[in-house]
Length: 140
Image (tube, rainbow, N blue to C red; front, side):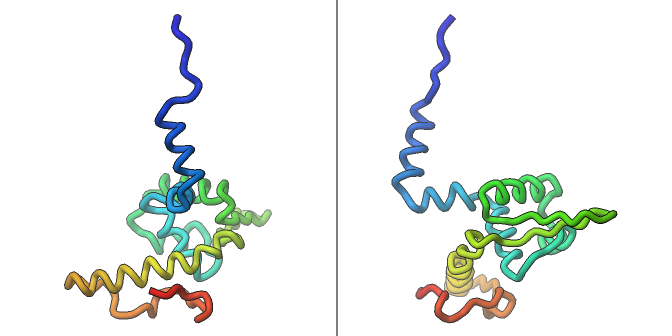
């Protein structure tokens, strides 16, 4: 019987990129379709599961639960369960998660500018975006 290869070239390349490229590092932590959206909604403060589900109506329960667990495992989200009946669980951004505020703001600013330039303006202003101190805003 042939021995199973412990590491594959694909995995080695992925690990090398993860260590050498900051964008790859970020995408590993908050990449995908739903994680940035969840982080965006938590920028306004802690939310219960049902509040997140209402805020992101197109996400399935399975995906929301899965991504909240991944964000918690990556120490970007804090899950706080209060010992009451019925259970009361809230999710909020950790200090590390709060560090994504300028990143999320830059993404939103770019989306607004790009959508206006392409004639498909998605927002007229950043009014619905969570507050950010002027000193933390990225220069675009």
